Image (cartoon, rainbow, N blue to C red; front, top):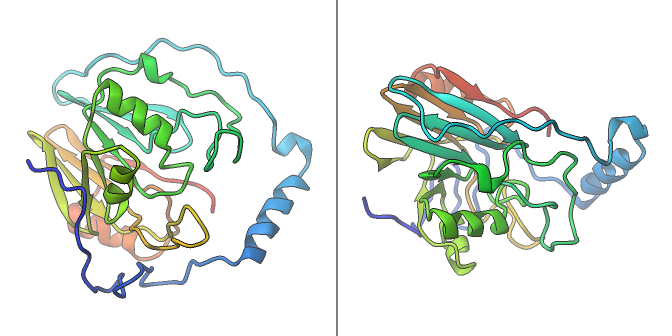
Length: 251
């Protein structure tokens, strides 16, 4: 199929011509909200926010799975390895030490990735839910591109941004649009209650969402970051109940 790095969004129930929005609820946060969250975290008991947690060593995942199987390997945060027959998928790859605009700025990870990038099996597709630093990590995406060059399935505007940063080969989708990056594999980009932005000046300029992966082996729902409005029921109504749901907790 043809990979699309940019699609011109049209006005819709979640795009006003300049910015995307949540149809059900306003999720914009003020600078005051940000500092309340930041200092609230710092004032929490030390035991609630450990600086480092040692991870045991596990064997690397298999290179592939047998017919009609789906394997799920949790790597950390929103990064999950999904293995379908003949296809390995990685969600929101985050392997860096910090999530932020600079190597030395941003929250530092508490646990190492459950599987190092070097120990992953070949990655055929990357799912990218939205552009926040803890989900769109440019360093990890560049490493994956150099190693396997998988297509990145993401929301409107994200592929164009990645291309400007030297990470090409994205498929941009609006909510409810689908693509087939591999034979027998269909990926639908679905709504989420969230927002986007990497600076104070680009809030909601690119689209956020989740992914439903449909194959002969079964169906998996990767929600990205989301609250709990009516879209979860709509995803099930439109696409059927998933066999596996990867849901966030928090925010």
